[in-house]
Length: 112
Ligand code: 5GP
Ligand code: ZN
Image 1 (cartoon, rainbow, N blue to C red):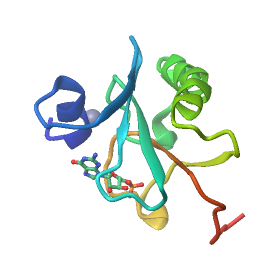
Image 2: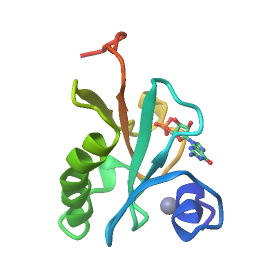
Image 3: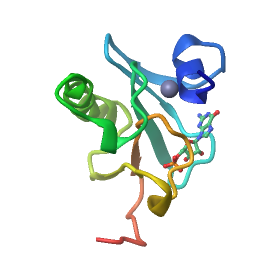
Image 4: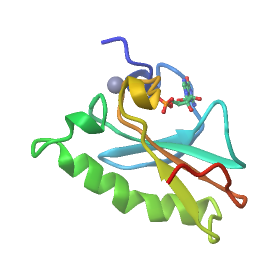
């Protein structure tokens, strides 16, 4: 499967890792949109939020258990935003489920 995030997990494409456990890998976004911009991904290939089900939701739970640790390590005491784009209408560009963590400044441009 030609998935860049699967290759990042395997170390075939370099990344700046900030967190890893049995289920979760997190690394700095290559094109940061905020002073802190981290991508948190499941170690199993799941294309997007639309493909989360009872067979793989453990990965989403583990991601959300990891996020407070990742945020604390990144110094995001003031808060942060979590975004997951799903499908073409949301302009998802990498088809491996990921959660953007954005912070390090007062964020603007909110949609909701
Ligand atoms: P999406 O647009 O699918 O929500 O987000 C994909 C994100 O992956 C983008 O923010 C983009 O900058 C990031 N990205 C794409 N390719 C790479 C890569 O090879 N390395 C890293 N670190 N980030 C990547
Ligand atoms: Zn993948």
